[in-house]
Length: 401
Ligand code: HEM
Image 1 (tube, rainbow, N blue to C red):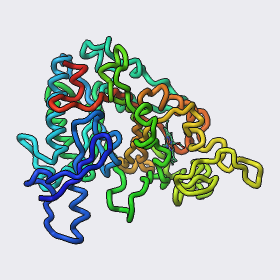
Image 2: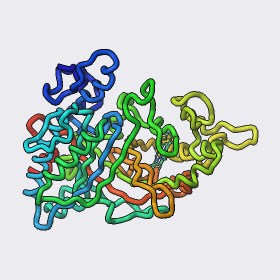
Image 3: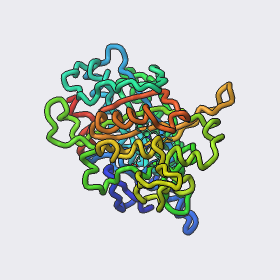
Image 4: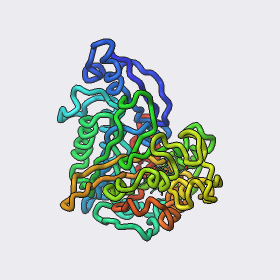
């Protein structure tokens, strides 16, 4: 059997014994086949303190799906659904096939599949659980540049699927939609992608469709305050108790106006972000990981990183230490009738409290970000993503049982 890498839901990596024999990584060839085999064999743990898919390294494929409970479905149906979904997610993440399977992923290993479940604001009214709705789910404020499509926003339930293989990801999408049965209907669905594992000679920060290195400033799981900023602490009081170990996801479909962006000369593009395009290093100097020097002046007497540069405005030091973990997928949904690509960023960010993470940063970006002229926020969602299930538990059980 192939030795598989098992990534803990909290991001730690360990080596496990074989992934399930029959549909585990099939290639038995030595040498050159090895790297490909590793991509398929990587398995992410379903159980843990946090759900998988938050600190898991970015996967090559993603599906974001929101469901609304069907008319007449309430707490009992929701609990049964989360129980079914959890069982399916656990099976698929182990690289196994659920009963009555479609066979779409039959020859592939788990391929780092993660399935992450969240609850939207409206879920709590539909299930009679309004008294346990966290205040963190209060609607996000409206921002001046919002062009939000309500039909592609929010939802009772949210599912994030990620995998390093497109068939494995689609397989999970079909299985979970089938599980929804009569209890819930798809409200909206979005497809995303990232660079494939192994496409670069060494592991590197991702690039987005504007060509920028994107993700450098993210907090690291090894930072001493990472947990406090990203996850709801245990022992939280009252309505939030069931959210211990959970996190809040803000989802924004952000269209990139690529025709306009690509007309900008590279030096202007770099000033919009405040970082070099080639390697993501700050314009104030150094390498990708050098801290921004926000006070450094150029020969013209102006700050080298402009006042309206995206990375200056969004820097945690400029926002009272607010931090979020950005974990996006790119999207491309074809070319519109006007010839412009319907492409951009499925921005997903994670934080213990959206009022200290996303909201203050987006408020400032909304007022004066040089990037604003090249993007459009088209859909929005805010979801409470409960902590990871313990062995024998289903996701959300502490709320629903
Ligand atoms: C940093 C791109 C939207 C928050 C960056 C960087 C790039 C970038 C290239 C610098 C590299 C890095 O640190 O990752 C984009 C693009 C966006 C977008 C293309 C839209 C399509 C947003 C939004 C927010 C946000 C909506 C939050 C409201 C941040 C934060 C940083 C950052 C917090 C890190 C700042 C630091 O720690 O220095 N973004 N961004 N971005 N962005 Fe964005």
